[in-house]
Amino acid sequence: MIKILSNATIVQFDPARVQSGVDIALEHGRIVKIGKNLTISSPGAAILPMDGKLVLPGMVCAHNHFYSALARGITADIAPSTDFVSILNNLWWRLDRAIDEEILEASALAAALEAVKAGTTAVIDHHASPNFITGSLDVLKNAFEKIGLRGILCYETTDRNGETGMKEGIAENINFAKGIDVKNDRRLVEAAIGGHAPFTLNDKALEMMKEAIDETGRGIHVHVSEDAYDAAFSHHQKREDPLARLNRFGLLNKNALIIHGVHLTETEIGLLNEHDSYLVHNPRSNMNNNVGYMEKIQQVKNIAIGTDGIGSDMFEEFKFAFFKHRDAGGALWPDTFARFLQNGNHILEHYFGGKFGTVKAGYRADFTILDYNSPTPLTADNVAGHLAFGMSARDVDSVMVNGKFIYKNREFPFDTAKIYASARKAAAKLWKNM
Ligand SMILES: [Zn+2]
Image (cartoon, rainbow, N blue to C red; front, side, top):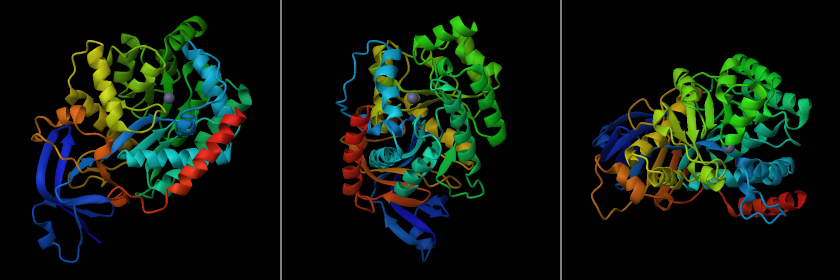
């Protein structure tokens, strides 16, 4: 049946557009028509009044770790960690080893709920649980599907727990990708081929990742040069830049997701651009880990924004991206960062097929809907300014994915109290396990 979102205000960042008093007709998870008075010309359609609310293309978090959702406020005994590798050793690599199936499920459900509440329609996740590898991506997938969130999942292959663990990671990526029913156009979850970072991926692991992308037709999702250590390791052990090394193994293509890239050289950025790969910028995480600022952001062709495990609030992440850039003396304005934010939708197009990221006929009906009451006019010229200085997750009223409301008038269609209670119980177990 045709659904009509009536009297909506369409707001888009790139190209900037504000169009009020329009009806949006949807069928089979796609936009079929946009115009005035569609409610009159479509008898029998289900009318969903928007009362002037803002309908935006879905917000995409292009890099996240749902396994880290239960680390918030952690009180386990963590040794002081003054550099990036100590932070990994003392916190994250202890945390991921303590994750079992129950903890992962609780973590993923809570993280997915919070993503949707913040207006996020899709999350690209990078998962690690070295003591529960096989089957872990299915646990995540079930959580995404239960909440109705769209996602691209992968397992962070690494050699830091030996060759057996590395091979199990590769196998989990391949089996999960092969299990995706690509004929199902309405599927919520897709697969990528994950790797932790070049400094924990030996040549054998990179070879196997190449085989995995060839076998599955997906792209890699890997941290690269987050900290200067990744480049130093690569120069010392391999005598080449980390991204050049990935390229030598044939891992760069238009589906490749390169995360952080804070310390990429100009030559490496050239490789990234030449292969049309994506760089995902995670400003809050970079600041939190004191790894440096991605100064060369303007040289990268394709940029999207992620949170790297610090929730999934893309309004907040966008603001940090812009303000940190200003603080570092950068010359870009909010409209460029708004484009970076909207770009996450292009990654969805590569993995799911179809069109994402524009409120236009033929595009997928993934929307972030805001009840945003502004004291100043909202126009195409100033929409990015509103995003930087006004709009926030508190304005999120509803979220639609695949033409279906998964969050409506600030409510989920199920009881969330139980999900939070299980998460708190699992968090206590996780911290104790560590
Ligand atoms: Zn990450």
